[in-house]
Image (tube, rainbow, N blue to C red; front, side, top):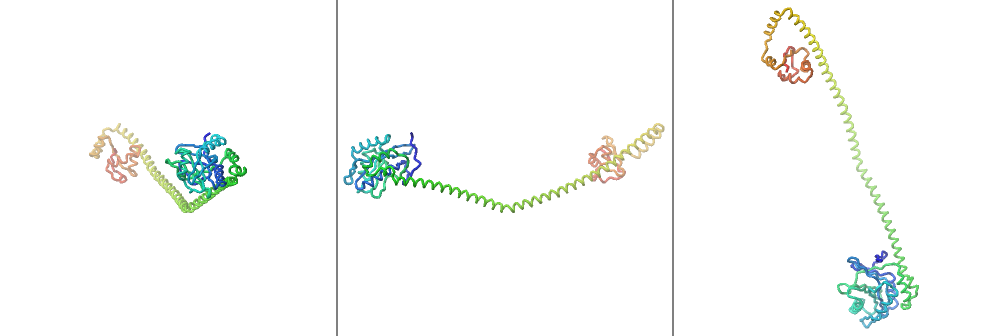
Length: 387
């Protein structure tokens, strides 16, 4: 089963390297207990865990630790025997079935709290130049430093994580080794400091959730108040505009009403003019009818006269022709199929067009052919050439 990154963690220092080190809480507690009971002599332990690589990141999970049987010190020179390594390997198989030794721990009083050539020599004797975690702890101030291989050297890391989960393998080992480190079972399994810290972490998580909820409620309240304020300011600023728009609409309504009255008056005037135009047309029609009747009577009398007095009519016609000798325009009209009209009292060009052609479309043509600049300036007895 693939290991997942723990969620319930506590960060120590600034973890910024590509190597991520996770130490289980029981292991961290056990290493602290080793320093508390053996503060005068050097003490060491082997670290049990698992290494997981993903892309360019490397995760090392330390979930177990077994104490070294012997960590020798001769001045500043530190030595770990092969027998100590073999005993640690057997203990690892007994309590941590699938675990492997991935590093070591040392708390050495009487030497400077810093990495030295002796510690590097021990590390390179136990592990290769590219593997192995080394944890060095000061037994007096209880501070620790983490080292990891980098650039063919053992260099200090920026930080690590403490994570919390069920760890029965480490609990069983701590119970079995209680006599060696001088603590009671209750102190190992139910460590008060560990429990207090776990409770503290849970309390902080609950407080953080409450703070987040309160922040969200506060932000929502501020946002709502801001929206209401914006709506109020916008309404006040737009009141004058709304008033101006209302006045403009009222003015437009009045203009539209006045326009309707003007249109109605214009329609009335047009109706009156049309009525005036119809009256002359009716008069012209009546006159035309009378003229046609007179013409019929004249034609009848002419026929009767022609039957009895042909010679006399011929003489009178010749005299009439002499009186009314046609001009050049008359000759042109006769040639073009035109004829003349004698203006009578009450005639207009529109009435003459209606009499001659049955419509008012020839008014302009009559004006042009007779050279009339003003069609209304005609007089009784005037002879008009009709096209």
